[in-house]
Amino acid sequence: MNLTGKTALVTGSTSGIGLGIALKLAEAGANLVLNGFGDNEAAVAQVSQHGGNVIHHPADVSRAEEIEALFEVIGQTFGAVDILVNNAGIQHVAPVEAFPVERWDQIIAINLTSAFHTTRLALPGMRARNWGRIVNIASAHGLVASANKSAYVAAKHGLVGLTKSVALETATTGITCNALCPGWVLTPLVQQQIDSRAQASGNAEQARHDLLAEKQPSLEFVEPAQLGELTLFLCSEAASQVRGAAWSMDGGWTAQ
Ligand code: NAD
Image (cartoon, rainbow, N blue to C red; front, side):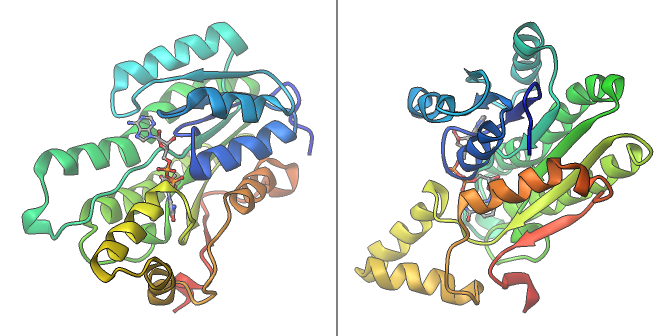
């Protein structure tokens, strides 16, 4: 895979899955636009060890005007986005009648509406070059539900729907749009859930095992690098007819 000369934007790529995908795209030679909060410098340093040029932009993807500013910087720096990975995401666990309204709005904005904005801004350039790859990081929760995650489940199902719609709108072009639906990946997002279970039970190892055993028949976490490899495949010409797919990598979660 040679992505030299291509520019990839990965939202929420300062940690976890986004960083794993950014590393794989950089290894293949792409220029990388990293986004997200936390230890930006460490993420840039890690990704810069490979391939092309790397910048970080701190846009809050829940805000349309910040996404527009991000695309202006990308235009000035690299020209346009060839590969768009909509990965930024958060979640909140609470029953629907106790779900804080502002938290609902924030989860929909970050996990779903941000992908609408980045897609509408990336598509004109992709159409002009008749090549583009859009990869939306949904979830097993984009295909099946769990209790007490209504906003997350709704946002991820919505993201799968957006993926299919965009795939149809671009079906006769060189642009593809697909979703990845990971099961548990051991990132800060999942570590928080293990920590809160461990606080209740006092046994971190048991909490980790229980989390997997409830959903993921393989009893192993998916690795960010494995999702990076799948993203690389979707960027290849071999995948040019993979369109509007919601691709599971979940240790058997949604096979049950
Ligand atoms: P993570 O918490 O490690 O990373 C989330 C990233 O998003 C970070 O870089 C963070 O700074 C960024 N971010 C958060 N809010 C943002 C905002 N408003 N604007 C810009 N960036 C923002 O989480 P992760 O586990 O790597 O999750 C990445 C994606 O994968 C999410 O969409 C998540 O829903 C999805 N996912 C995760 C799992 C899992 O088991 N970890 C499973 C399925 C899907």
